[in-house]
Image (cartoon, rainbow, N blue to C red):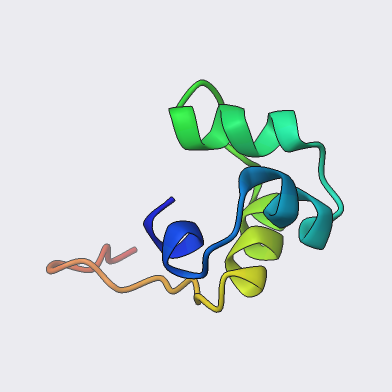
Length: 62
């Protein structure tokens, strides 16, 4: 939500950019639902953000 506000985008505008219903953006921002990975990546790209995964302190050894 912070990045969306900094870009001066409404929920409706972001939803249109992402090809999603505005209600989906509302539910995600309010914490009522969690997006699947493809939806999350779609939103992040439109906000100019990146998703990254970092290793934990003690890697699991098999």
